[in-house]
Image (spheres, rainbow, N blue to C red):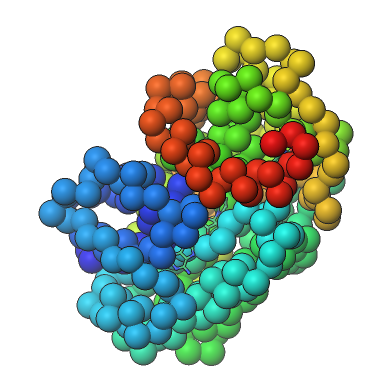
Length: 333
Ligand code: NAD
Ligand code: DAU
């Protein structure tokens, strides 16, 4: 299988590239990535010499490059996106460009080149917030942030291409991922690396918002299964089944690192902050998928990874990250 992965130098994409090369001898992967602040070739250092792997630097909005890169592919998996909710609030433009227009550029190439399979990596955030129960794939889209609205726009385009042109598309919508190689702007790697350095952990609002945590390899396994066995035109939720309040995660990270609660700082809430996410994953479970990594084991493993790999995250936290952190967190920076 000749697979084009976009955004493969980011967090989930790089874990997926490693996962696929490790499990399927017959897979060849081309990774098309723009290398924004979130893209990092260090994430794939251990596989860069694998003859089945090729890296192409470029933008998914570049139609000529996309056409050239996708020609002859058996499948495309689109991870490329602007992904951080807070950045979408302070500057939505790149989210609309990459997440909506970039997805459209890929869809056009897939249609024209008659690529047999296109998998869009989406998010549970397109459904918005839910107080009780869980979203199914049939739930209405009700996004809250410019990020999730851009992802929802992309999902609608993907499904419209199926309905209008018969393009063989699939969508996965996963809950919050955590694990190695996550850029330290998202809560788990930010709080782990801040705590290691005895910096404050900025908790938004009352800290009682709930996310459903999914270990990144479990997401990779779900994506692999949908890619191989999913029905074109269908959407598949991928959730970890681990609903945890932000404060609980915060306390557990501090505990795992032997640090005290005095590092916690309550800061102004995120505008439009979704209270709770929860997914019904019975559709994917019916294909045989189960999350494998319990939350506490996954979090322990993740904390351990950041403790053991400061050479990965310290250079990040001394670059673009610093100015972002100062803008976002003001006096805490
Ligand atoms: P990330 O921010 O870590 O990485 C994004 C990658 O996309 C980077 O390598 C970046 O360089 C690349 N990229 C950005 N714009 C590009 C462009 N115009 N052209 C080519 N490459 C570009 O993201 P992530 O957390 O790994 O998320 C990957 C996908 O999964 C995204 O589509 C995101 O919406 C979705 N998702 C993420 C989570 C999560 O918890 N992280 C959960 C559900 C869904
Ligand atoms: O649900 C899937 C989504 O999960 C993905 O689509 C997004 O790409 C990904 O960024 C993530 O979005 P969240 O907004 O849920 O993740 P984040 O890590 O930014 O925030 C998780 C929770 O932690 C949220 O309730 C806000 C809170 N938070 C976050 C940060 C960065 C804090 O309290 N303090 C912080 O400094």
